[in-house]
Image (cartoon, rainbow, N blue to C red; front, top):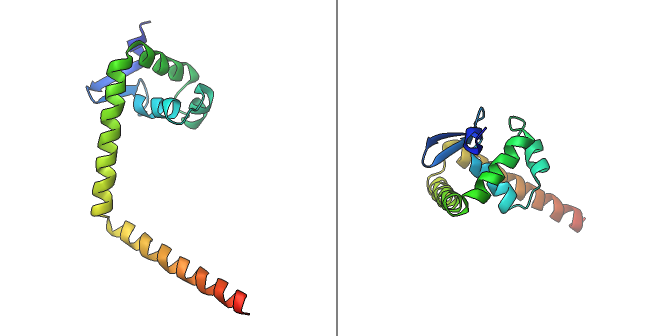
Length: 117
């Protein structure tokens, strides 16, 4: 079995662990940026085996320059999507923000009553 056999190369910007919907960026972000062990990563994603996690890490180590660019591009895209969501929140997000503010205001009011009283 070749290392590449562990993956579905759907597009240049979309590489998935074969048989799952998990992108290699998900596993590698946990490994590189969150310093999680392969065992912790495999436990977090039930559809991914420990062998597949190790294969993803090995693929990264064998193709470090290309995969690092792949991850950097994914992170940039993610940041752009987050900004777009913040600038144009969905109606449900607006509703949740409003509810959160109301709950925080009630909590502060209750704390003020207790300390005054």
